[in-house]
Length: 136
Image 1 (cartoon, one colour):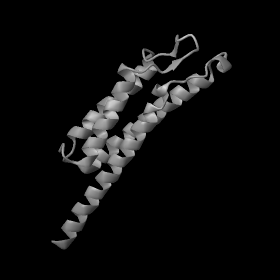
Image 2: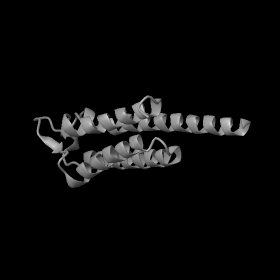
Image 3: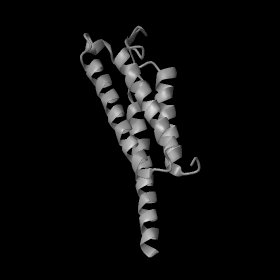
Image 4: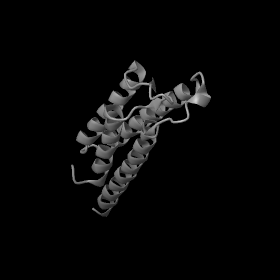
């Protein structure tokens, strides 16, 4: 359901990763030339996987356990995306010349935070349902 807070968190997470792909360059050098681009197959694939997993989690609101697992997979994919960004930025030649990483590198971290908040809300809903079943 759209009115639940975990759905809002998952939508924000999907918009953050989608915004990362659409608007922000990832890493630029001092001349403004992109060093890590979003057109690389690994980066593009991980971003698409993250958005697709978020959309699947939104529409699986009736099965909270599945939604929880899908969010965990999405967290793992965002960690892998973050790892790719860190690895690529650390292995650049002339690292001292690349001082500005760009805001795009931070977006997977923000997405992970919102996915963790969504998982907390899903867990809280699941505990509430279990407590109500106990009273019957």
